[in-house]
Image 1 (tube, rainbow, N blue to C red):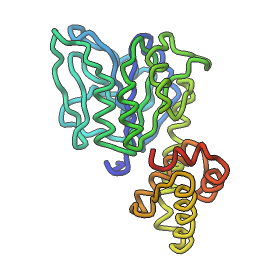
Image 2: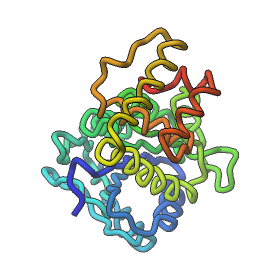
Image 3: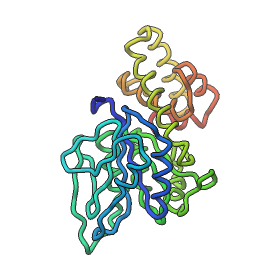
Image 4: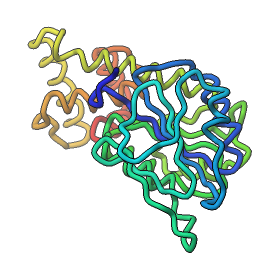
Length: 273
């Protein structure tokens, strides 16, 4: 079993037209023990949801309804139960009953924001088809805590039936990947693999060589931004570099440093964003 510290938790928000998108996503996913998924949708609090049963027919991972006190496990997808708002707090699910007077409480924003606080740079936020702006604030929260963000692309094959939700997220400029639903799982798996390679640097790379590489990064960033990152803990700074390297698909620290040297746009985004 993957430990809580190693687990990446993927929050997926969907609304109108989202069932088809979710079916396509989990149909393309296959299996992954390093990822846990939490699906949050807009549902009438008075109607019983059958989403778990529907998605279980398309998924090769276990599909469950989230329960209070349960800790997400890798290789499992959790569905928000009807009539509740879902949060992640101290590594476990927390449910709050939705009042009939205020059923439209932005459930996607609420969950993604809690995910950002709880998992920080091990959070991934995905916004799929939907008819409003729910999810946009959650995407901002995940980006601010160093996580990865995705949205269903309107100009790709399999564009959302209702593009307002992903388009609202994209309009923030804080979405790392605008993708078709079917291509998202492969990107997620690549991100997990590349992150692991960066996180092993401190353990396996020669310490002096790593320090030299980090000094290059400090100097590049200080010369372009005026901000001195040398006071960061080395492990924290490596995590920040790893996150940006994942987004630009750099396969090594050296490759990412080369990207920094030749892209002023990337320097402005790395690694504090």
